Image 1 (cartoon, rainbow, N blue to C red):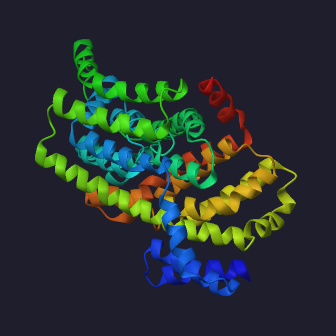
Image 2 (cartoon, rainbow, N blue to C red):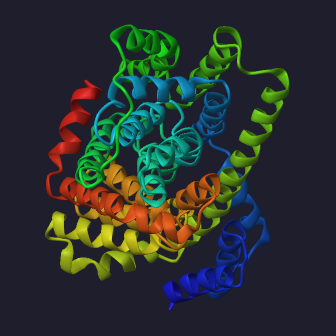
Image 3 (cartoon, helix red, strand yellow):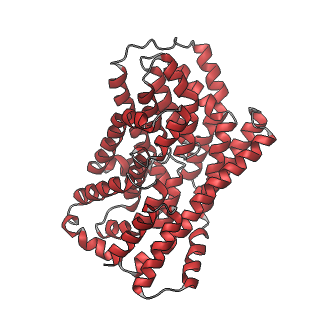
Length: 426
């Protein structure tokens, strides 16, 4: 009955158009009434505690770094480098999108920001080259969601705070899975592009490649700084976010000189607005998380999943299918905030490594960004490319299937995540 009241009230208020953050608060109030412990002071205290977290300071700085990267010329130079390296191959522009997405993922950690940049830079080029617009948009959307997997990742920050798991370990564990997602998309694009008869751009000369590499060097140094700093304990993930934002700002203003004072104001405002949405969601979710614990919903969930508890692989498959279903209806951050306090007790009871689970969980939620009908990244591509959502949805299907395949391969072979994670962690 308790679970029904929580889920029913949450879905009910969302169905009538209430924003998710307010829906979380209202479902929390409904649960408090049911448990006969309603207290406005407790409600307010949990909201405040939800935002009062040092690790969450990483969110605004990573958002700021992503905004600066797009406006300050870092994204454009990375795309140009990828174009010079692999653009001449059959379907080369598609490989450019994948390579650029992997590099940009190591700069911002925001799927929406990376996808918007890729779509605005590459989608017109792919359409002019003769690629199907919907398929090109689907490829860019599927490549853009690598951002929450390869560090730095806002998704890992949110999960790490909600699950009390080391964010540094999550960052390092996400490197190989993120690259495997890129490989899965590339293989799919290879199969699709071979069916098209499109003349690729001319092969760049080595001097042109060296020039592109020289121009993008400042941008490429940033992910190295972040990963090396985390591996050797030079700074925490929160401090890494500050380093990323300051570095991007200095490069954009002093080296590339493409970021004006007027643009800087717009960048700060845009990053602040996005951060405010995420932080309010996090604060509101803390009320639900506290009440989920008080109502003993995790124990009830453990009881429901007892048939799978003896087999970690089957349990993970069941959880991943559940998250896939939720991801079709909810955005990434709310799903992480709602499901983490419910699923983590199950994961710990089954003896599953929380860092390994966190990588799979965030990967699943990232793919949810391109699953219809709510896929945020699909809407971004449709908006930037000025096309119908149905067109992008049709184009993204083969790449989405490839990413789900990679995820389930990681479920069956956990050492693909845990092995590299231990190596990167030293």
